Structure formats: C-alpha cells, structure tokens
Image 1 (tube, one colour):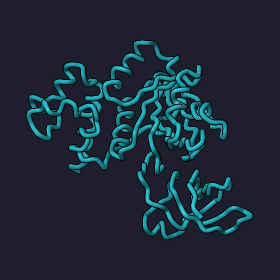
Image 2 (tube, helix red, strand yellow):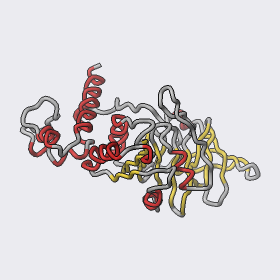
Image 3 (tube, helix red, strand yellow):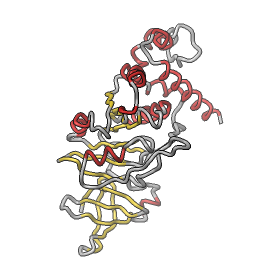
Image 4 (cartoon, one colour):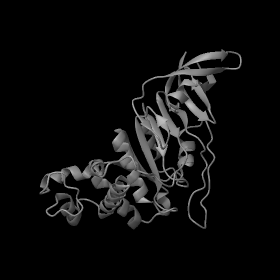
Length: 292
C-alpha cells in the first residue's frame, strides 16, 4: 500500500494512504543499513501488520524531488520563511543562510515578516530595502491583527509549503490561522534573551485546503553551511548575477578584487549592504571550513 508520511515522532511514522486511515509505521532495518531515514513528505510503500490497529512497516521510500535536512522534510514545493519584524529583532544573517539553503536545493522561497504591528515604519522600510531588490516575494504581516493573511492563503494553494524560521516569531500562531485541523501550541518570548521558546517538536504535514499542505517544523537558532564550497556561495545570492558581467575577473569572488560589478552595485545602493556583509561572512566561513 502506498501513502505519504504526515508526521514522524521517536522512530514512528504516521502514513496517510489516502483513505482517511493513518497507519503508525516503523521503518524496516534496511534503511539503517543504507543510511537512509524516512522524512515527512516522503512517498512510501508500507506493509500492513494489523488492519484493526492500523500499524505497519515502511518497506520502500520513493525517489524524492528534493530533501531538506533542517528542517527535515522532503518533496516540498516552496518554503515560507517566517521571521519577526520585531520582538525578537530579526537575525538577517540567519535568514540569508536559509535562503541560500533553499537556492541550493532549487526550492522556491518566500520571505514573511510577522509582528509588523510591533515595528515602526522605519524598521519596515529597512526590511523592504534589504529584500525587495533580491526578487524574493516578500510579505509583511500581522498574525495578531490578521493583516496580510489572505495573501498567505493564496500563496499556499495547490502546493506543499514548509513553514520555517526561528522560535518565537509566530509560526504556530500563523499555522492556527491557516488551518483548523490541529491547534498548535504557541510560546512566549523570554524577556531575558528575547528569544522564542520552542513549541513545535517535530515536523508535521497538515492539509489546509484541497491539494494544499503546510509542514510545521521546529524552530531553529542557527544554520550551518559547511557543505558549501566558498565559490558556490555567490551563486546563491541571486541578485549578484545582474552585476557580475561588470566584474573585471571571471569567477570574481566580490571580496578583494578590483573593478567588481557587485561591489559597485553595493556602493550604488542596488544591492543591500546588509546582504553583502552577510555574503562576506558566509563566504569566509566556508573558506575557513575548507582549509581545516
């Protein structure tokens, strides 16, 4: 029998076979030998152990069209990257790392800043100035005031969307607005460190409309880019491509080279200085990792 993994907890996988029945399954030992782990979103084949108790084993994982390690999901159409515009202050370096990860996997990313009711116009204009030139679709919303939610609903239609971002930015509250199948636990912000308390413990696929699903994922506070070569990084800062023809050197890293079209675009305001600084930090991090 074939189905989709909707949720995975502590070695158990909950598989929807399209018949309204959810089977609690374990993965066969062969996957451990092959160093493969089932992921939420996987299309799988299962053998039924007990029809009465709805239990089974996963015996085959079908080929994935994509796969993310963090968040750990497979076969998604797009990522809705949710950060807070304020409380906590957005970590744009972390956001750029997530966008870079999506670019590498060739997954469409959409940027969403929540809590816009807590930010002033100067803060919102700054976020626009950083991300509007990138070409990514950008949404400024307030879950509390239900502003911008209709546009997010439209965005989800006919797609499997992973909703990801740091803790405390309002992901669970947004999920509760978008669907009424499951009530997500919402958390508060720590006054001491102004970080969110983790509320989601596992990835889960939730239907929000016919042929439309969202994947709730645990919050994260860091995102490593160890697997990247330094020369790859510039390809994933998508707005750089428009200015690279003006670089004197082919394969310009846009760091120390003279006559660099990207650095000129930063100086001229066409590329955000914040994005460029994040690029340099990630580039140097990858360069340093490769050295050791």
